[in-house]
Length: 162
View 1 (cartoon, helix red, strand yellow):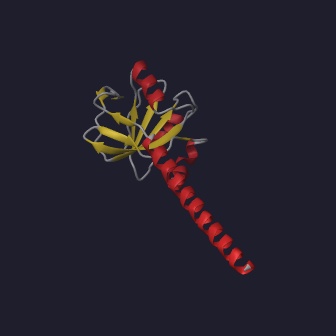
View 2 (cartoon, one colour; view 1 turned 135 degrees about the vertical axis):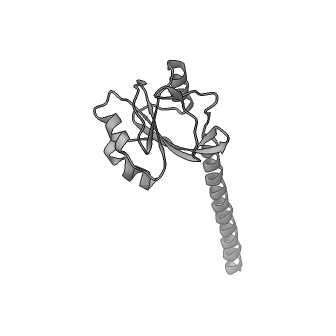
View 3 (cartoon, helix red, strand yellow; view 1 turned 90 degrees about the vertical axis):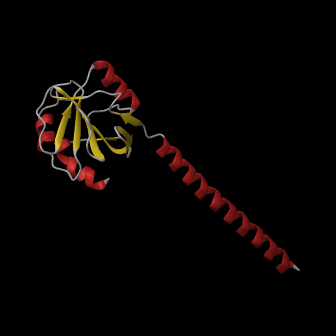
């Protein structure tokens, strides 16, 4: 009789362990879906950015976005020389005009637009990096978490890790 009681207790604990395991997997799945739904959109028809004197109109399906400060030493030059497998949009906090390079498009905008951009994407540090992916027409969705770049020299290595 003792064997029977032990067996039913074992079955109950196995059942509870299976239930809690499934609940933990469901909770993790729900959390990651929630975190992904937090990603923001940017519509380049509503948010006007300029490249030198022209309004920026996106033409690629994906971009790497780097929000940076041109007041940091050699930042603009390092971004100009960056060669990634995706085009780079470099958005300057101080809105300095810079000539585009083959792989980097330097963007600037008005104060209101810049502040809205910072607020929308919760950017707290410079330089920060994230990806955007075309949703339709000029509407793009954030396609990664926003990460702080400790050193622009490590941009290529950071991108390869993501």
